[in-house]
Image: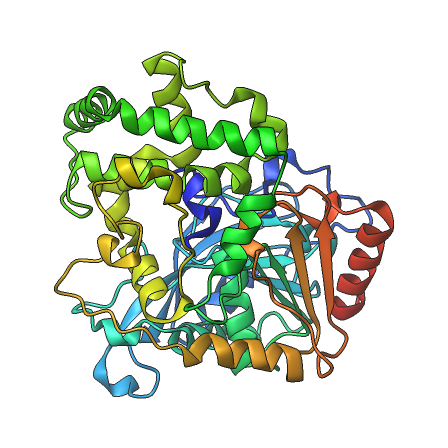
Length: 442
């Protein structure tokens, strides 16, 4: 269940987020004087510390913060860590959007789509065990969806005295999942949540939905081209893996975590169709190299689509917490290998265990996702899910039920993993925007 975040890990951007530099000018009627004491107000919040204030676009102030979090919210006396946050301040009378990518937090300035639509503040969170937000020493039992939800609850508690207007939460991919998990345990923290491209792997023993999706998505010709490219890549693995290893050597990198360049290469090839549909879609089918393409063409295509750098230690080490979560609670997507059986050297290599050091135990707890799914369908309130119809990550999406109140599911026709409200059909986009603004009271 990696979902296509891996296709964009190196950029560390977030689904639905856009750079401030690309925003339209702030409307004169929306501009307001920033309170002279906003910095003091933030510093007065319990546990918060301003690391730095960075230059911001007109009408905004931008801060990098830390918030002291217990390593275990059930036992705060056992120590804690500093969770890294960013705050894009618009005005204390504006709504505030709690945003997460589900991974590290970028210290570059951007506004998520919901923050733009309500012209609000944005607090962006780094998830525990990612980036600099890492307990030392680390007890991996403290990395679960409840502890992360408690982190988000603490963030809101710390800042609500400053930002008293309604709060909205949002995120894409793993960030969308994290947004839903936070609502499951703290449903009253925000007035509404928008989850983009959020997978919902309810039963990790049954992954047929993902396999069925990949067997039917797009055109038969495109699917055939992808499988042919996979075979060609594995048939030329000796030459291409040598190139992969040389690339890592030139950077002083290696493959200690996954095992070898050969194994990392095979994993990338096996996952290529999933990553292709997740990040590119039918429009990119013409660029799939033919089996008789040059080594350069095959290698470069694989590197771009399946992100070969992800499997080298310099990147893979950063995502050990993610794979730990996949192997303990979130679940994972399967890979179809029937057409490549004669070329596979590492059966099961795509599983989370490959990406987590052996001294860290992995014990899957199936009740976590079942509980969240049940809550969404029976008690979920003010939830919005925005998915791409051609995105394999949401082959198992969150679904609404009879108990879901004031909640909505939207789909972008032909959309990939980077869907946004703005890409919906016009009527749906207008409806979704109106709902969000109603929740936020603007």
